[in-house]
Image 1 (cartoon, rainbow, N blue to C red):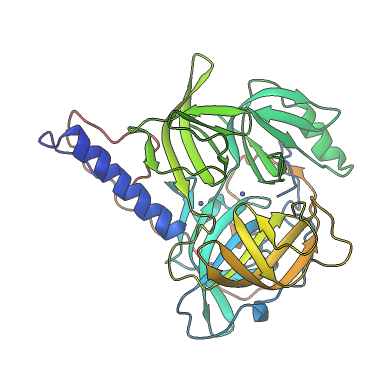
Image 2 (tube, rainbow, N blue to C red; image 1 turned 135 degrees about the vertical axis):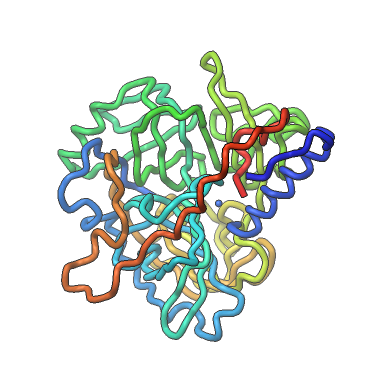
Amino acid sequence: MIQSSGKHSGTKWRALCAALVLGFLSACATAPQQTAHLEPKPGDGIGGTGIAPKIIAGDIRKGDGIGGTGILGTISGFGSIIVNGLELEYDRGTAVETDGRPAALEELKIGQVVLGTARMKGDKLYLDKLEMQHAVTGPIESIDHDKGTLTVLGQAIRTNMAGDKTAIDSFKTLTTGDMVSVSGLRQTDGTIIATRVDQHADDGRVVVRGSAQKVTSASITVGGLTVPLSKETTIAPVKDGGRVFVSGRMINGQFVADVIVGSAPLPFGDGVKDVSIEAYTPKSAPGTAMTIEGITINGASLPNGTAAGDRVVITGEVSGTDRITATNIDKVRTFVTILKARGSLRPAAIRPDNNTRPERMAPPRPPERPNTERPQRERPEGVPMV
């Protein structure tokens, strides 16, 4: 952790925090239909999300790896890490984050939405960076066990357990006030279609990410949550309709923001040339280009029979700051499974026994820092550690 000197002014400290977070966003650039069972059952991670796209590594341009591929989608399996039908390799050099905080490969699980960048090495894609992105983390405000819906931090969440008795029984154990982290993608009306719901202890931090609406100089709205804006908490500008990540705390039952970060429609940073993005299709007028979360999609057409609200994986090339020329669009389907992890489930731990590839290990953690005296001004909560 970088510590501030007592000689630095508050203005310089905020500027440093902003620089750190902006650097993190440009590096990582930080959302599926499976909710959580509270007790992991044998075989979790094998059935997975039921995604069966036709995408293969060959759909991504091969070359010397320069430029990289931006990936946003749901983890549907392991062996390597499988996202959007792509097999993504990893090694000790793969940087892993979760909602802006350092993490380990052991924390990756089926149904999580991840954002990352990868490069072709030979005929395989190797991850440079990967961030687990929860759509919302916070206390359950309301829940309807019969309909499979819940509300967290004003965000409407829908699950589809597809008759899975274990998942249904697990969902019924959730109640208002429980702290959960929800992985999922949003439909155009802002509803989160959950791919994973994890119940966990309250660590004091709540987060929400989505599309910023009703943006004024004083506040923004994300789903049903109104977030006040201030110079102290706004690390990167927020645009109306643009992506936003908010981290904060619950104080006396009210959400208080610590960090607000706006990001570009294509949140992968500079240099990314190819993309694979999972999303829900919007309503589009005939003959017009499709726009998803501020990204205009040209090129390939939607598969026959695709309707508004269907889930697709778009593979293509970046043709502008907010534009993709699609080379392929596949319609996919996902089921929700509700999982509560009581131990780590490392990707290597669920590879088949006949896999001769050596087990990869999580990057070594840095040595423990000596117990030195902290200065009076500390790093604001929610700002990623660097």
